[in-house]
Image (cartoon, rainbow, N blue to C red; front, top):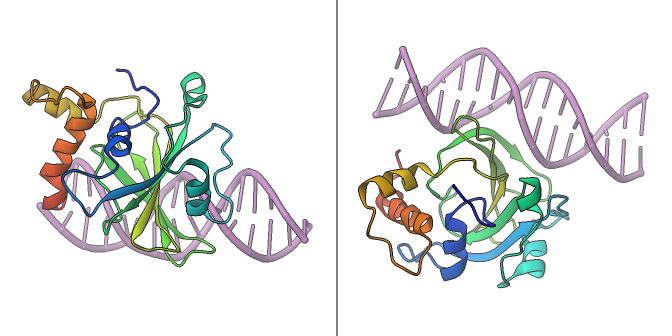
Length: 180
DNA sequence: CGTGTTTGACCAGCGC
DNA sequence: GCGCTGGTCAAACACG
């Protein structure tokens, strides 16, 4: 189980292609990896993300050494929650200052995995969703396991296997209300 | 009945 | 010290 610099395997695929090949409605516009002592949110998360890492390379941080990272990206999507192949359990919802939209808090529901995900709509452009991942999964995505088990040889050679599996999973689930 | 969501309460950190 | 804000907890509830 090796996760490169991404806590979530499909991030690289997100970033690499920038547009979800299966769903043109979903577009990753901004991507940012925060340092462990991240200075993420000034009053405007989306703007800080845009200014710091727009269309740049994925920044390698000390997450590899510390085992903790925060990754945020902005996605153009009508869906609040994107199905990234992991199983999330919602544990909180808060309306935040300076934003008319509530912020939703999710935890990875896999045992022993304490990765958190925060989802909120961009206050300046509600068509965008800001997703923040906090932590690194200590397990494979359930859909990766499924995919590797059932379809081991259908991976495009240029794409990260887990990412492709995730997208395959998304293709299969995102259009069917993602019941898992 | 098991699992996930909702939502109000609670707590900690921070600025004044 | 106090109030504000963000983050988490946990009981109640909904659903398959």
